[in-house]
View (tube, rainbow, N blue to C red):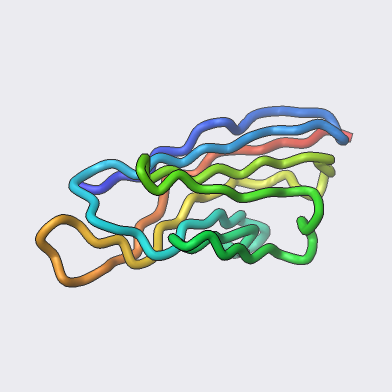
Amino acid sequence: QVQLVESGGGLVQAGGSLRLSCAASGSIFSINTMGWYRRAPGKQLVAAITSGGMTNYADSVKGRFTISRDNAKNTVYLQMNSLKPEDTAVYYCHADGLRTVGSPYGYDYWGQGTQVTVSA
């Protein structure tokens, strides 16, 4: 059974930093893209990274957030610097095209979400 477990959310003052982590567990063979979304409203892409290291960022976070990934650990990170009150949201980890061992098909999975609150 595949699970995405997020950690690292919390409360921080404007201008501060947080680092989110998301570890995928289970009998995982490969993951195409891993990313972070936030609800504000609906789920909006924050950042994504492919297995080859190509990244994509929302315009609102470019230059402040950095996404990285450890393929061996099936883990994705989001370093958030220069945080603003408008970054306050629940952040969700997403795995796109996750294949488990023995399966020819990839599926999408979501984490449970972690709250990030930035005070003015």
